[in-house]
Structure formats: C-alpha cells, structure tokens
Amino acid sequence: MSVTSIVTTFSVTGMTCGHCAAAVNEEISRLPAVSAVDVDAATGRVTVTSASEIDDAAVDAAVKEAGYTLAGRL
Image 1: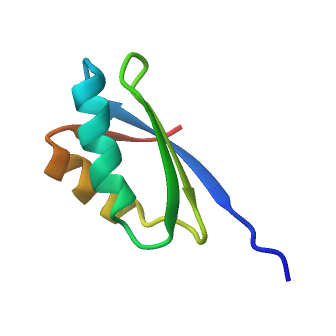
Image 2: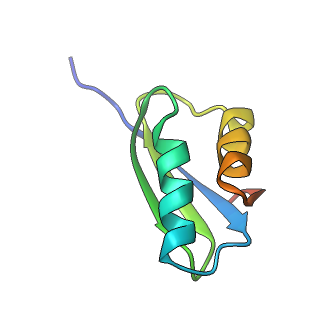
C-alpha cells in the first residue's frame, strides 16, 4: 500500500526574513498530518506536504500564531 502525499501551496503576507520563515515553519509543522513545510519569506510562498488534505482554517490559525497573515491558496 503506497502512501500519497498532498502538496498545498499558500501565500503568507508580512514575512521579511529567515526568522519570519522559521516561525511560520514551526507553527505549521505542528499541525496533524503535516510531514514537511517549505517557507520562502521573499515570495511569501509556503508549501505544505501532508498525508491528508490540509485544513485551511488550521493553517490560518498557525500562521496567525506565528504573527503573519494567510492570504490564501496559490
């Protein structure tokens, strides 16, 4: 039985540096089923790899906890 990963890309506003990216990465990584997070502060792109469909509301809450704003899916 193969495990399928789902990759979802979001736009996050307000990030300006590596510290910003690390904070967003840390919060999103805590969500259930998330196996990887790639944050690019320069573009605001956050790519989340998960075992199941990611809950946008949970991602929004995690991004807010980190101090930034989720602008939506890309």
